[in-house]
Length: 82
Image (cartoon, rainbow, N blue to C red; front, side, top):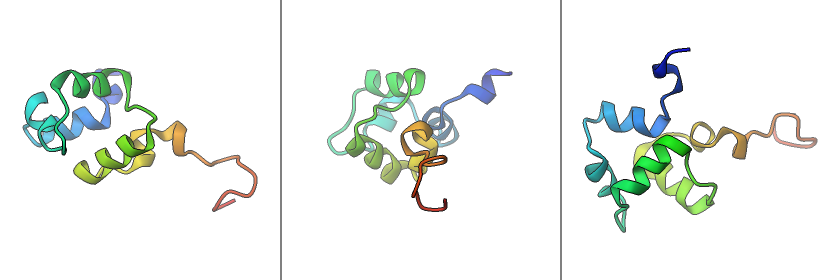
């Protein structure tokens, strides 16, 4: 598996937009520090719902892509689509 297959959706978005860590962080209100952005790219998005929804709003990346395990309802009895 190549590194491109393991790239986080946030890093992919940021790189395609030509944004530095700092510039990406400044898109939020209040802004996030570049270390927070780097942490999201390396370790994954926090499971705090407000942060996930804020990232989704700013980037357009669906929450199901940001944190699949958090929103994956496959196999949950009674879940929508079951």
